[in-house]
Structures are given as structure tokens and as C-alpha cells.
Amino acid sequence: MSDDIAQALAFIDSATLKPVEVGLYSRAAVLSEEKDRGKYLGEPGKDGAATIGAILVSVLANLTGQNRTDVANTLEFASRHAAQEAGEDNHTTAYWNKFKKSILLLGWSRQKDQRFTDFIDGQTTGAENFSDYVIDNVKSDPLYSSTEREVIIRAFQSLRSQPEKRAFFRRFTAGGDKGSIGVSVATVTDGALAMRFSAFTFSCNAVVDDYLISSIKNIKADVGKNDVVFAADQDTFDTIRERLEAKLDQATDDYIDSVDI
Image (tube, rainbow, N blue to C red; front, side, top):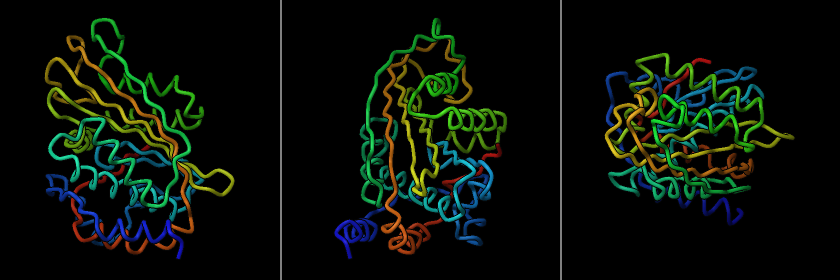
């Protein structure tokens, strides 16, 4: 057994995941029947999307069913472990740093990692809400290909148009005068699974009720952004998958929801 695999297994066994209260729109029953979070990301051969905690994750059509499961399991495990480690405030750079560290311990390698800061004045930015700001940022971000940008934008538009799914996402993204939105897209290149990820954190001068749709006309906010590219080690995933799923299934609560695109 390689050192990387041994480290991943030890991390899974020792990690404590933050429990999540089952909400009004419970996914727990579905997960108890299927035991496969990848189903929320759609069927192979089609683009798919889901919300996992504070992350809107999209996958391109070329991901297999197993790829989708690996992506969903990774993001849920890393999100819940980071939430447990970070404490009450999940809308900070510290939270997303713990999130990234968890992913690296689960058999992914970091190919690129860069940070940016920005300032938003809702009177002048041109964005109606923070999701508009994120979409505009993604449109101009060279991290994403044109195909990846298109699927991310479709996912945002679909999510914002569905009140029930938006309310579910709000539970993880809104923290009063602080909020955060993670954007992720996964693809397969030359047979290898890769994931691009951006974390946006917002520290505002007033309370924002919903970081997807609430007007920011009278809001000013400091923004942090972290772009990361991860590549999966398939040998590690094939070895740790069963242990990872068993740990997640110890507390199957509302943490993931599909988004039709």
C-alpha cells in the first residue's frame, strides 16, 4: 500500500464530520435507498449539476457514473469535515482552506492554486445580486473553458429559478452579513478526472438574506476568491471508495440536492 493511500485511509477513519439536521425537503430517504450521491449529478452522457453544501457543482457529459460518485463523495466529505473544523463561521477563507486540505488528503493533487481580492459597491458594480457577480467572474476567468463556463451558468440560472432548491442552498451559503458560494466543475481529460474550483467569500456592510437573489444595490462587500485545480489519483480512489462511503453513510442527512440543467 502506498503512503498516499495509507494517509487517505487514516484521514477518513479519524475525521469527524459535522452532522446536518434534516430539513423540510429531506434527501435522507433517497440516499438511504440508493447509497450513491453520484445520482444527484445526473446520468453519464449528459451534463449534470447539484448543490453540495455551499457548492454548486457541475459535471460534463464525459464523466462516468463512478466519476460522478467520486466527485460527490469528495465534496460532501470535505465540506462537512471543514465545517466541523472551522466552527460556527463557515463563510471565511479559513473554512475553505480546511476544505481544500481535506480534498488533498482524499487522493487529489493540487495542480493550480491562486487567490484574489475584490471590493463590491452595489451602486456601481452592475450586478443585481452576488450570484450575478459570480457568473460575471466565471465568464471572464481563464480557469474555465468555454464549455465549462456554459454549464456553470446554466446551473446557476436553473438553481435561481427554483424556490425550493434555492432555499436548500441558502442554508449553507447565507450567514447574515457574511456569505460564501463555491463553484466547481469536473471533467475527464485524457482519461483522468479533474476538478476546477472557485470559492467566493463575501463580508458585507449589512445583512444579506439570500446570496443568490437578494438585491445588493445598497450593499458594499469585501470579496475573497480562491481558484484551485485538482487532479484525482484513480488508484487511491479505487482503494478508499468503500471506506469513504461507509463514513459518509454513518450520518446521511440533507447535504446534497440535484439541479436540473
